[in-house]
Image (cartoon, rainbow, N blue to C red; front, side):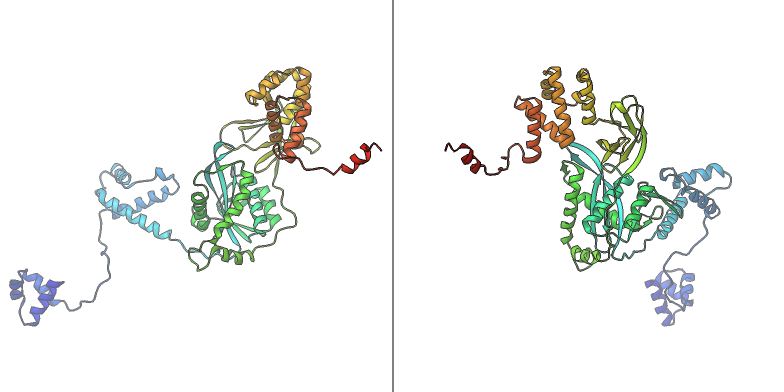
Amino acid sequence: MNQIDEIKELQRQGLGPQEIAGRLNLNRKTAAKYMKVEDFNGALLGKKASASKLDPWKPKIDEWLAEDRRMRFKQRHTAKRVHERLEAEYPEAYRSSYPLVQRYLKEKKRERGAERGYLELVWPPGEAQADFGEADVVEGGIKRAIKYLCLSFPHSNGGFVQTFGGETAECVCQGLGDIFRWIGGVPRRIVFDNASGVGRRVRDKTSLNDLFLRFKCHYGFSVSFCNPESGHEKGHVENKVGYVRRNFFVPMPEVRDLESWNRELLGKAEEDFDRPHYKKALTIRELWAEERRHLSPLPERPFEVERQEKVRTNGYGKFCLDGRHWYSSAPEHAEETLTVGLRAHTVVVYRPDGSALAVHRRSFGDGRTDTADYATSLETLLRRPRAWPNSPFRAGLSEPLRESLDALDRPDLRRVLSALSESISTFGPEVALESLEEAVRRQTVDAFSLQAISNRIAYDGLIAAPEGGPDLENYDRTLLDPS
């Protein structure tokens, strides 16, 4: 542009094209060209489109790219593959170069990116988003991968989390129900991903599974699903999932069990509300106080999260769930059809009269598992004490416990197992086994000691002194007075 300015300046001085070209060392035609220009308004920035050798082949390339959208990401055309395919299929006519193909595909990629531009969504108070994340924890001394359900509230940036072994409908309902009771209300609408645990959206039709549908009707909230490949529509909970992983799961937590830890996580989540909102000039706690007023009220009764199934037991009284997880009922129920209740953390085996026969910790994952119930195993051993040496119950005990019980004669073993079975029924397997370990340590492995120790553990603790009883001093004076 500076050179053009010099040409116009010499033109104003009355010089002709030949003289200007000589002074500026230019071609005469160049000087004459710019002497004729009178309009110097700025043109729009951008390269003027020109014909390309690739133009005849662009419709074919667009056709291949459209087909790619139905293929896996790693099975789509690259620029190199497009160029090679055109050379192979049209060897006589195709004369374009690889750089032209490469530039065209980059241009198409930019166009698709423009189509995916996101609209910032506005979320009113009382609406929530839900999604699962995955993390590792140490539960009961064993490292395992768990799933955690996040329920986030975009208006206030508040969020809550609950942990489970899987992403089933039982886990979703249990987690949401526990959060609803903690916050004292129900969101008016919850946005989910296209998750199989809740339901599935195929095009414009959404189908919810039966358990979640009943749960939704019970609490009275609306449900929306994201469009396919549109995770930004629930971007708040996506970010919350990452925030929870970084702040609640680092370092790796060590927990006794997920149920008790879930109660701690609800309080821990609210402790995090004292930080400022990322955009609004208020804290999350202040915004959450406003948001809670927009929640729907809780129903009078909580929803009992359980999905029941009919199962067929094998010759050992065991049944299989999810194709890989085996659970025991009782040997006397071998080759029978039983009803089981699937819950978020447990599996309940019901007798034909509706009472609970056994309760198992629910197993998740791809590997095979085999879970036995101590109570039903002991009841079988009481009827068949000769099976003690090869029983699963004996195999699951520690070496000191096995040696102590092996040393008992058959009548004493039956009495001890009977007391242990009663302790399991009354106080649960943890207290019963702890009482057995304490009896072995004290070298008092008998039925009376087991009963006494179980009661001490359950009510007072082994170390704490028992509560004082009534004052019997007046009775002593009356009964022992010699006069």
